[in-house]
Length: 237
Image (tube, rainbow, N blue to C red; front, side, top):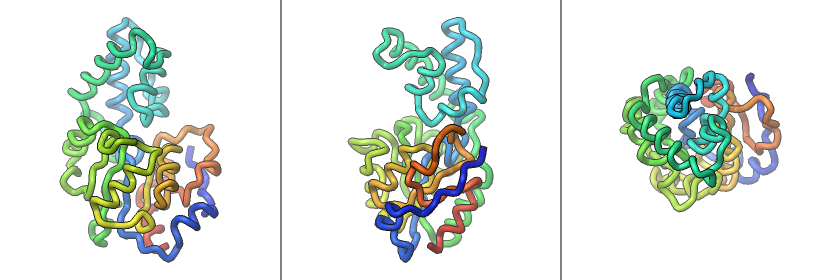
């Protein structure tokens, strides 16, 4: 379900003055840059099969795809990391996912056109994800975008992951821009929290894994888009 356009709130206006020139666009990975849910679902269902459980439908798994192995194992088995079976199931899940990281994963919608348009305009772009480095880089390589990205910030690149601002500030350091010169596109509350905490404009990717019961007005987002290239309208703010 497409989400409503987010109002430009006071927090965004203070942190990201409209006169700021957009010099970089940064993306969350799962649920924003690429639709990774099919491969994550395959890994989860492989793990369930190892315990003689039937597969779950992709539509059931998709909303949890941004929440990593912890969220997916909770969905698939109803367990948290404290459970005695958690580590063994997580190892099965991650081993399968690493071997099959880009079988069905594809860029979302017109993301390729958005990236090309940014590059043509000389606007840098990069990835800030909570996905560990060991999966981020191979996935971006398989998609053909690892070398084109100005930065690849993973969940273990810094001491803290999103919603902490440290990964956002590290990305700015690497590509030589200030947070106020960046747009950050993501599909999870923690993406908007990290953007606001660092002083970036946070834009919600409504086409991603945004659940229908989320109140987007509480996300303190600068705006939202229903397809990637809609973000181009915000480069001149």
